[in-house]
Image (cartoon, rainbow, N blue to C red; front, side, top):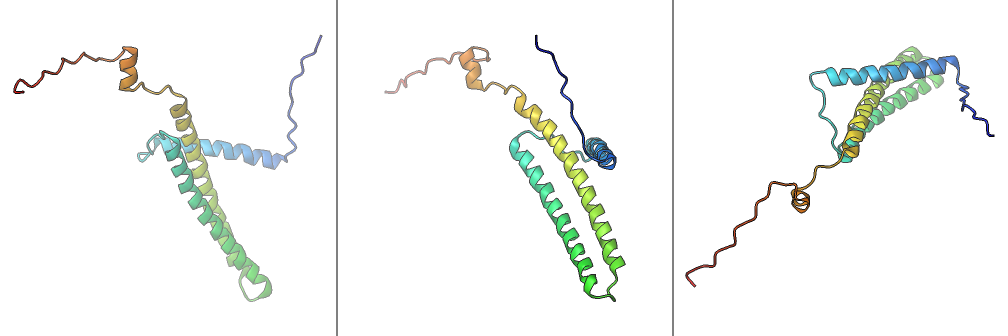
Length: 154
């Protein structure tokens, strides 16, 4: 007889990393709820083309935020060779750009979660039958057409 074993998972992350991951997941859910409740909530995603458009739009914002952080880090790097250059200002810029990037990422993650939910429903739902399928199955409201009358002027 074979004994059943419970699959266990060993999480080797630090407590801080686990707590931040938990907080991030909760925050993404909160942002998603805020997006759905706001008066400007986007329409439901109906297909993969719309999903890609949303992903591309957010990716562009993320790339711009990443570029700003990179630029601010280059500015801080420039302070290493020049002791007269204010490193505090450069570091402050990094704080501001990473904070902005965090907000952009949270919104993107929440929007993609909403997109995932909508797309899942759209792609797993049975499609509506076409009029031709209704006719073939005998389920549509179709009537037989009257035969065409030959022109009597011939």
